[in-house]
Image (cartoon, rainbow, N blue to C red; front, side, top):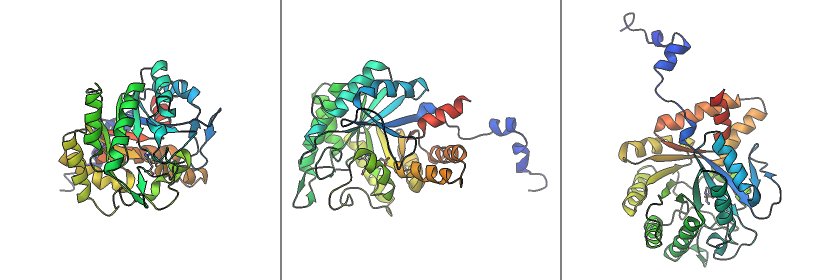
Length: 322
Ligand code: PBG
C-alpha cells in the first residue's frame, strides 16, 4: 500500500518506461491493404481516405515493393474490375484484375501477397455471392469462392483471405486448394466480420456498395460477441490457419475473447472508417494524427491481435524508423 508502493517509480523516465512496456508495435505484424483498379491509368486518390490511392494494375509491383522496402511483410490485394456481371466472374478470371496485380507484385518483390476473396467488387449488384429473388445464396456461392481461391493461388497469392461470411466457405476453399495442389497455402478467414458502418469509405475505394439491400443476412450483428466465438470455432474446424476480427476498434472485446479462446494467430482489420475518422479529425486540427494512430494500433495489439491490417502501415513504418 501507499506510501510503500508507488507505481509512479516505474514511470520516472523514458528509459524505465520503455523497459517495462508491455506492448510494442512492430511493422512485422502489419498487412497493408491495396486497391488495384482496372479502369485506371494513373493513381486515383480515395477522397474519403486521405493518403490512400487506388492504383492501375501496372503499378502493382512497384507500389507493393515500396511497402515491402519499408519493412512491411505483407500486402492485401483488392481488385476492382472493368466489367461486372451477375455472378462476379471477374473474380476467378485467369486475366482478372486481382490475378494480374498478384502476378506483377510477385515479380517485383518478395512481399507476401494475401488475396482478399469476395465477389462484391465483381458482381453487378454489389453483393458477396449469387443472388436470387433478393436472397444472397449461401451454398450456391461456395463453388464460386472455391474457384476464385484456386485462381488467386495460381496467380501466385501466398495466402487466401475469404471475406464473404458464407457458412462453410473455409472448408470449401480448403478442399479446392488442396485438390489443386495448394495444400501449403494458408487461409486467413474473416471469421468474425460484422455488418459495420465503418466500411463506408472502403466501398468508395472498391466500388462495391450493394445496389439494393445490405449485408446483414451474412455479416454478423454488431451486438453479438458469443456468436463470434462460434464463427471462429467453426472456421478453425474447417481449416482456417488465422482468424480475423473485423472491424477492430469497436470490437476490441471480441479480439480479446479470440486471443483467450484460440491458440492460432489472431488478425484484426483496422478498417477504412477507422482510418478516415482519425484522418478527418487530424485535418481539422482536432487530433494529433501520429499520436492517435500509434495509440489505436497499440490498443488493437494489446487487446490480443498478432496481425493488424491497416491503411496506416506505411505511416507507422516511417514513424518507427525515425
Ligand atoms: C469485402 C470486404 C469489405 C472490406 C474488406 N473486404 C467490405 C464489405 O464487407 O463491404 C472492408 C474493409 C475496410 O472497410 O477497410 N470484399
